[in-house]
Amino acid sequence: MTAKIINGSEIAKTITAEIRLEIELLKERHGIIPGLATILVGNDPASHVYVGNKVKMCNHLGIHSEHYSLPSNTSEEELLTLVERLNNTPSINGVLVQVPLPKHIHESSVIFSIKPEKDVDGFHPVSVGRMVVDDPSFLPCTPLGIQVLLERSGINTEGAEVVVVGRSNIVGKPVANNMLRKAHNATVTVCHSATRDIASHTKRADILISAIGKPHFITADMVKEGATVIDVGTNELGKTAEGKRILVGDVDFEAVKEKAGAITPVPGGVGPMTIIMLMSNTVKAAKIAHNLL
Ligand code: NAP
Image (cartoon, rainbow, N blue to C red; front, side, top):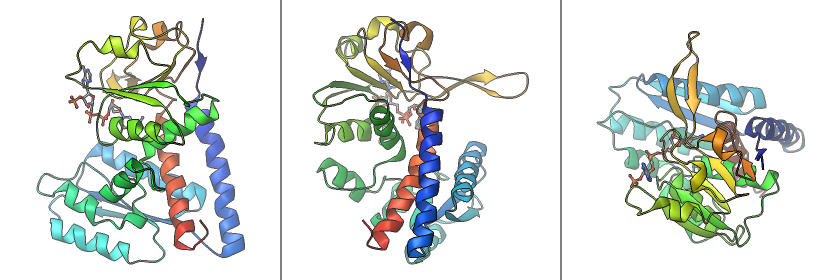
């Protein structure tokens, strides 16, 4: 069996067109322009690229974007003052602080200071708590992207054995909690670095989601015949002669695709979904702010 390749780039492209139209209608019918503020502290090159892509995507979609690039010696107090100002700015519906932050700033204090109504990254404990108690909330962008990939590929989670490898706060845990919600009704197992015999768990999975950051960790013998395999891992193996990043996932794609029923590639699987889900959360925040949801 050769797996169906779940083309995240194509799905993200379709959703981009849908969101663009939704924003046009919001403007036309209600005079609403969703707004996203992005804050970057310091000079981390990867963070610059990530935030730059978010700003570009806002411009492409017609989302009002305000970007704040602060020097690495910015104090926690200064950063909190800026977040507070954006919390109280009506034209801004989402506030995103790019992590990692410089060591002298407490990441959690800053994330906690974002108004939950503007927490479009879904990392605020109020958003996390709402997800866990199955209340409507902003879901973190990568877990939401995985949910949408599954939905749009016609993969049913109802009663399915979902095994998540990795338990980080940004991917593993929220993916697991989301799949446990009534809307998805999966039976969920979470593996991590202290799990004994990981393969005994992964081999049971109807849907296997790997988010650990280890190239080719998931091999074909760890996968059940016909399973859906979602590879969140994004591991850089080096650069091409042209300076392009060589990326691979956590999954041994070539071998696993011969056994799985469906699989996401890296690149072009989960990755492109994350940024468009941020845009989707921003539009949702704008609608909630104007009592349209
Ligand atoms: P992270 O914070 O480093 O967490 C990694 C998790 O994997 C931890 O829970 C760790 O277990 C577990 N782990 C590590 N080695 C393991 C092993 N040998 N066996 C079992 N579990 C192991 O990473 P992350 O931020 O979740 O990211 C994971 C990967 O996804 C990275 O490659 C990252 O680049 C990628 N990513 C992609 C996207 C996207 O949009 N495509 C978004 C976010 C992240 P412990 O908790 O026990 O240490």
